[in-house]
Amino acid sequence: MSIIQGILSFISLTIFSALCGLHYFGHLSAKYDCETSYTFEKDWGNLQRHSSSNTQLLGSTNEVVFMGDSITDRMNISMLFPNKPYVNRGIGGQITSQMLLRFRSDVINLHPRVVVILGGTNDLKKMKKYHPIEGILENVKSMAELARVNNIQVIIASLLPVCGEKADGRPPFDILRVNKLLFEYASQNGIIYLDYFYALVGSDGLLKQELTTDCLHINEAGYMIMAPFAEAAIQKAQKTNSN
Image (tube, rainbow, N blue to C red; front, side):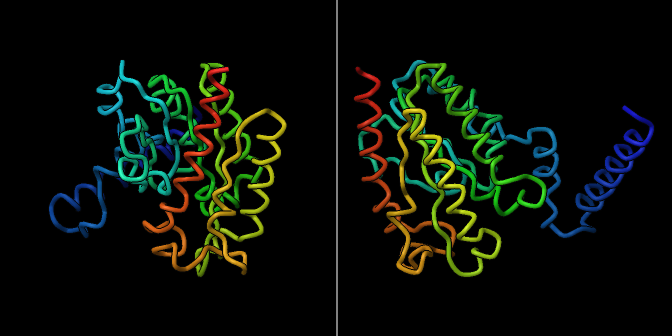
C-alpha cells in the first residue's frame, strides 16, 4: 500500500468512526446505519444474507435456485411454485458482480439441477458511468460457466422493462441492448433464454403500469404472469439435464 493509499484509508476510517460515534450518542440521525455500513464494507457481496439458510439446505433436494436482485428477492416462491423444491437467492440492490461473488455459496454449494440467473438492472443504474454494458454480460457469462462446470443447467433471464422516472436511470434502449447481448450469448451456447421482457412490456415499450408498484418492481399480478414462463423454461432445462 502506498503512503497516499494509507492516508486515505486512515481518513476514511476516522470519518466512519466519528460518524458512528455521533450516531450511538444520539447526535446523528438514525438514518445513518453504522451496522449496515460496516457490514457492507466487510461483506460487499452480502454472503451472510443467506448463509444460515444455505447451511440448513445442505443435503436437501434443491431442484432450482433463482439467483438475482430485488426482482428475484421479492418473488414469493412458495406461492408461485407450490410444492416445488425451488430456492430463492435474490438480494435487493445487487449488481451482477456482487451476484458473481456469492454464486458459489448461494448456488453451487446447494447442488441444484437448474439455476435461473436474473441480474443487470442495477448495473445500469449504478455502474453505467464506470462500467460498460458489456460488463453485465461478462458477469452473467462467468456465472453461467461456473454453473455448467458443476453440472447445473442454466437459464438466463432478460432484464425487465421499466417505466416512469425509472427509465431515466435505466433507459429502455440500454435494457434492449443488454437483452440482445444475453439472448445472443444464450443462443450461441445452448443456454435457455427466459424472456420476461416480452411478457411484461406494453405497446409503448415500457413496463405495463398495472404490473408494477413503482415502475421498477413487479406486483403480484406481474409475478403471476412471469411464473408460467419461468416454469416452462425450468421444465425444458430439466429435460435437457436428464438426456
